[in-house]
Image (cartoon, rainbow, N blue to C red; front, side):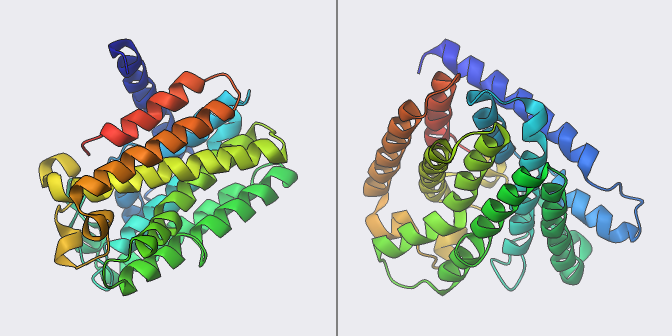
Length: 295
C-alpha cells in the first residue's frame, strides 16, 4: 500500500470517526434523561473512545454503492450501539471479568455490575428503536439483519461457544470468530448496502465481504493479544491465555495464525474486487489496515 493511500485511509477513518461520534450524539439520549445514572453509564461506555470501525464500514459500503452519509446514519449508529453493548457485557465479572476497556476502567468498575448489565441492555434496545425510524422496507431489513447477527446464531451464540470452548480445535475457533466478530462486520456491510438501495445479490456480496473483513480483524486481534501492550491496545493483553480461551494462536501456533490472517485478508480483497462500486481502492486499503493494525 503506497504512502498516499495510507494517508488517504487514515484521513478517511478519522473523518468517519468524527461523523460517527456526531451521529451518536444526535441519536443517544442526553445524560440528564431519567434515570440519569443509567444514561450516564450508557454514555460512559459509548463515548469512551474507539475507532468506530463498524460505523465506518456502514458508511463506506453505502457510498461505495451510490448511497450517502445521510442514509447510512441510522444503521451505523445502531451497529455501534450493539457493538458497545457487547463490550460492556463481555467485560462483566461473569464473562471476561476485565477492568480495562479503551484505555480506562470498564463500565461495571465505574458504575457497578448491576448498572453495567442494564446499560448494556439499554444500548441494545436503543439500537432497534433506531432501526425502526428508517423507511418501513429498510427498517424491516435493518432489524432482521442486525437481530440475526447479534443473536443466538451470531454474536451471542459466539460468546457462548467462546465461554465453553476447550482444547485446540481450529474449526471451533473459526466458528467462534465467524459468529462472535464477523457476524457484526457482515451486518455492517449489508446494512450499508441496504441503505443505498442495493439489490439482493449485491447485499449478499456486501455481506460476504464484511464477514471476511471481520474474520481478518479477529485473527489480527488474536495475534495482538500476544504481541500488544495495554497502552497501545487500550485493554488488557494476554487475557485470552489467562482465561485459557480458544484462539487462532492457541489452535494453530503464532506463525500459522499469521498465515491464516493473511489468507483471510486476501479472500476479503477478492470479495472487494467483485463488489463493483465507487470506492474499490478504499475497500482494499481498509482490509490492509485491519491486517496491519496495532490496536
